[in-house]
Length: 147
Image (cartoon, rainbow, N blue to C red; front, side, top):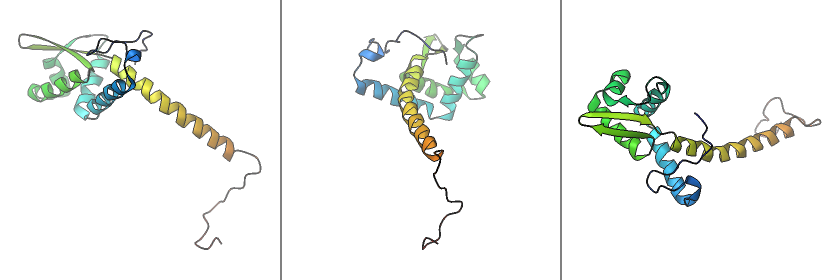
């Protein structure tokens, strides 16, 4: 995922992510994660991401062919991805064009980064504790009565 130095404005409010209340950002991140929970939607995003260099915009028909999915089923997923802000979709007559919107994914990555730092710090402290000289380790679990 490419890093972006500038903050991406929210599609609904138009404000940069940092200017929005924490609750609004959390709801947006939860919507993004909920959209990613479905394997078909995740496959759509992966396909758009992997083909971005050759095809920055892909039609729903092309997506359906690449994913071996009927277009009618795909449209439901495209609407959900669009409402979560993960794709941008334009409609010209009967042709739906889709492109990846990386902003919400970057927001989720930042949000998860807070938890990653927390767990890495705790796991590093645990490793230091276990690797201290003089710490006795049990080689097998004790029985019911400590023998």
